[in-house]
Length: 368
Image (cartoon, rainbow, N blue to C red; front, side, top):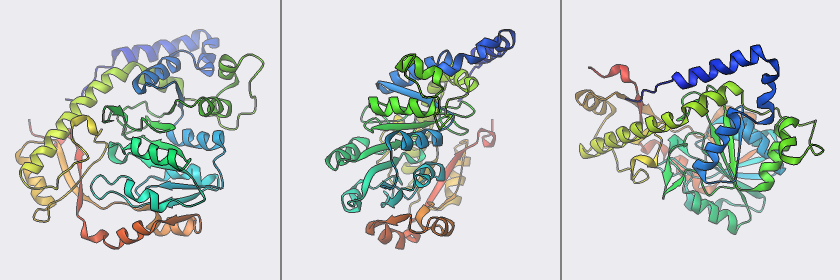
């Protein structure tokens, strides 16, 4: 399972490299967003049903560009405490203050019920994170942001390929950020993307991050910016690899989703884990990380024994959610640059009462 054939990708990479050697002018092609970059962005636009897609060197650079493009600085951002440094770093770099809300104890995503009480007069945006590849209810977050005149950014780095209520993860956000780095559901070696329907976000993102050659194709020959502060374009080899493998990767992902969903059902039927209402169907998560909650009567050892008996290519180990605002290094480095909602402070007091574990896919451990 989960194997892909790569002859087309390898042939395209070889053709491009040989072409650049024989005809050096071909090396300039990707500066204008042509070739594989164009075709990949078209696939992303089609997948999301959105007007615009811009590929980047990585997701963090896409978020950095977004801050510059919309002037998001010296503001307050609502976000989840279960996060990754690369997701929040661009906002801190632009002197924003993070306000961490509570999290859902099952999905480990942003707790939507806490948003109304967590907001302050200084709040300008919400950053949601599709933790483990399971989508946040972006429609509900969008409604909250619309009501309070907030920008909504979805960090969907782990969730490309998952759906909620028939829509791709992060669909209702003003800006969706993707990642194609190692371990993600779609792999390009390195890379990211920004997806949006907002013309201003799109145009300013190009203006501040892409080469003048591409700006000219969008804005005209006399309207470009030679001093773009962020060189954020995707490596052409990454664009070729991802463009050629996009459909095969998606098909392989669907197989993996079905297998993970079946496994969750087996663990529940044997009374080893709590219910998972946030994953009602295989497509509801990419299972980037399969974090589950043990029944009080079960143990990780029992789970691993069950997996072995079932000849499953997974193993379980202990997992404890990493809450960024309560880590000593974060608190020391970003003192007075963040705050926590009252609900999160109370939730943190009872963290030890929960019992999570993580399943990791490793085909080598299954017997043949």
